[in-house]
Amino acid sequence: MRVCGIGSSRESGGAGHDRNVRDGLPRTARPSIHEHSAMRRMTKGLCMIRHHLAGAAVSLALLLAMPAQAQTAAQPAQPDIPQSYLEAGRDVVILSGLAESFEAIYLEFRERVTQTVGTTRPEVRKDMEQVIEDLRPEAEKKRQEIIASAAYIFAKRMSEADLKEVAAFFRSPVGQRYNAMRPRAIDEIFALLQPWSLQTSNFLFDRFSEEMRKRGHKL
Image 1: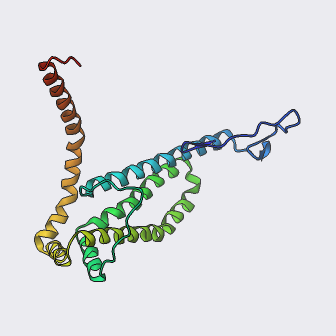
Image 2: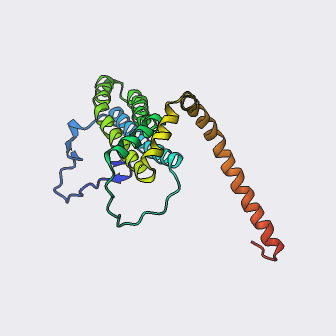
Image 3: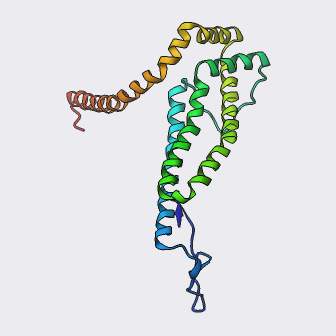
């Protein structure tokens, strides 16, 4: 069976190979056709979830990232950052709503696993829901790790005084209104982004070809 693009090979036996045994299971223990089909659908669905969440994480990183120079394979030693800087950076990460964005990964995982597994394997729904809930503390631990990393980055890039001013803005009424409005604004921006990207790309290629033709180059 191939799972998320990783195939497992079967051993091909000689004349004495027991053909009633496949994939390590006796024929009598093999899943029925319907069970096998359901398992394949569930596996495919989980693979799609894995790839979608990975893409979501990349999109989140692109949305929130600031321009940075390319990282080399050999990373320099991280400088020591005073604890007060880190606390100020953490305040910015939390008050700005960035920490809530990290929580979205678990919420989307829960929703998509519930939709996929709940549809293809309804008999496991109770265990599925329990396992998903049991994974919440582990997901929260991961979220705290990325919050700490984000706080370190802010503390490394900004002074403690500037970080405190940024945090003060997000604590202010206008900062709170900004945070309340931002998710809806981002949704609208993303809705515009895909057609804008395509149109702008086509426009630039057309203009490039036009200008090259003016210079006697046929592309």
